[in-house]
Amino acid sequence: DIQMTQSPSTLSASAGDRVIISCRASQSISDWLAWYQQKPGKVPKLLIYKASTLKDGVPSRFSGSGSGTEFTLTISSLQPDDFATYYCQQYYTYSYSFGQGTKLEIK
Amino acid sequence: QVQLVESGGGLAKPGGSLRLSCAASGFSFSEYYMTWIRQAPNKGLEWLSYIGETGTITYYSDSVKGRFTVSRDNHRNLLYLQMDALRVDDTAMYYCAAKEAGAGAEPVDYWGQGTLVTVSS
Image (cartoon, chains in turn orange, red):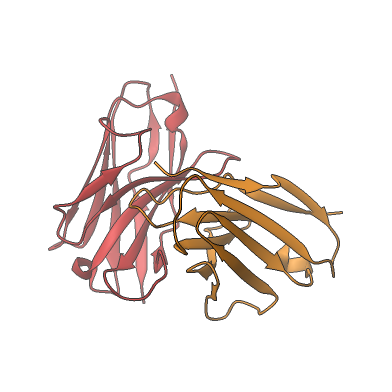
């Protein structure tokens, strides 16, 4: 199975900051990677798919990049609503494995 | 409107069984492949299983292979997860998710709200 590793596990930042979350796959997944945002008690929300395609309705401050085994999620200017946990997910194979998550906290 | 409603969660003893259901409405269920995903309390997301549109193709994570069985009834728009030999670490919120086959590059189109499974003696 493909293992997904995110870093960092926790990220402290302030509103207005630019933040980058990384995700590494244990083997090449081309660009079959998605990013989700999850808030406590809520269902995960798809932000980005195909590594860099923004889901309709997602603010443009979110962007994704990468291919193969290395991927990043960038939030260009943090807004108060962005403090949440973020997950990457590969869907190159049918074991749609997730990263362990990155909790974005208010500094 | 589109709905995925999970049910069947609750308290089970270690070694016991539960069957989860996911009722789909508002879309053509038979044209969607389905997945089960779970999230242990204060932990991350874990993909569990996949079932193709007709139900003939299934995949499982190593953590549940041989213990859980996914199935579907396209006439009744229902997805199931039969959970046997339950362990304490199966305690989690269980979500079903749907993706239209061959349409779009997103990994999922719809999520359910989840059903909570607690395994404890």
